[in-house]
Image (tube, rainbow, N blue to C red; front, side, top):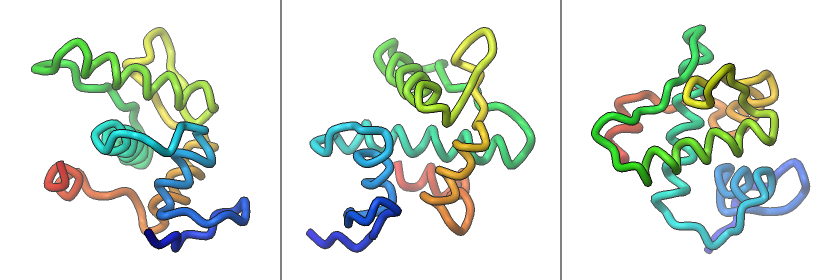
Length: 121
């Protein structure tokens, strides 16, 4: 395994995403790929929504209760770290300025396109 990304904390990580997952969010490094990918998919959607001047509403149609619960938990985690905030319901979140800075760290060239994100699923 090659630890190519040197993070602001001076440590080396496999990627910018690995740094955010373990170094910023404080999640364990023994994650499942599907949860890791869902986290960054939601973060990218929040980033695209912010750049377009809107909020992100997570998808719940045609998903299991467990899938929507995971989406909600990710949004709560982002909110708890002040990367996102919400009004009445966490279902409608938006990035804070701190969240935008986090996204710029993960995607210095801008958020992945919706099409490219869908192709990676």
